[in-house]
Length: 358
Image (tube, rainbow, N blue to C red):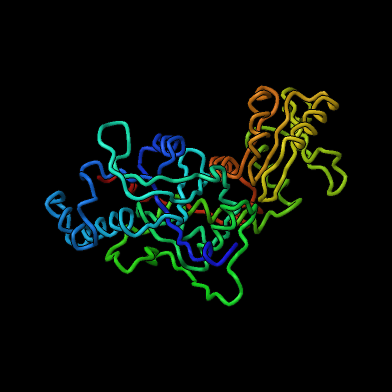
């Protein structure tokens, strides 16, 4: 990556609370924000004029709140530059889309669109969150709509992933690292005088994913998957390490675990995406063992070719990615073994859904 590319900035732009707009942005080559009650931002060229624009439109908001919204909209319209990196959290899949800003601010009138947009070339739309190290995931959990992500060499690291890296390279030597606290303001702009804080649900899921990666790396992940399947009513046999023959877990119904449906499970713990050849291998093993179904656990997700193949085999082969593993772990956590509950200590907590406000 050349010096010019290393100087580009990285921004988290959440888009809309309505995640149907995620696909709209990807399909139309936009990043956007859903402040539909505000007309064009082109008349506001700096933070002061943005505050002046917003103040009469937000009569029920405090001065700090108006200032925060103004800072975010000013960043979107005026501070983001062509060539900067933009990250869109995809709410429907739990993945991340990364692109490069290619144009200035535009106002789109009418319904069924995000009114405030910037053109973007989306280069990757399938990045699993397991690819990103925890320190950077913390910043990507900011709840604000527009946030500059700059700590811990973020632009360099996100640029590497945008350019095709399958793993977060971490910060370069000599870059000072920040230690985050749960209540720290992660709005990386001197203009932001207030912060909406963290998306607690997303942050918690990212912490659970990191804990799984720490406690259940490699062959150990098979044990966790077997525990989850057992909680779902299956009887499981985990194969010894190094001698699986393409089979990591054999699961079935009934006391003996040999009643239908029977499942051959293959577990891939790496953060890189799994290709279609793994699905071909699993399909062959399922036929060889005369099992009813195959289950591929791919923590790093699938390549586009593999996803297409899964759609053709959806009645025979299922896939769990990292988000699905977390969903099922949370669903059955109360009946997990003591070993799992010690390795991944969780507790229930009710929190305000900040995204439901306004």
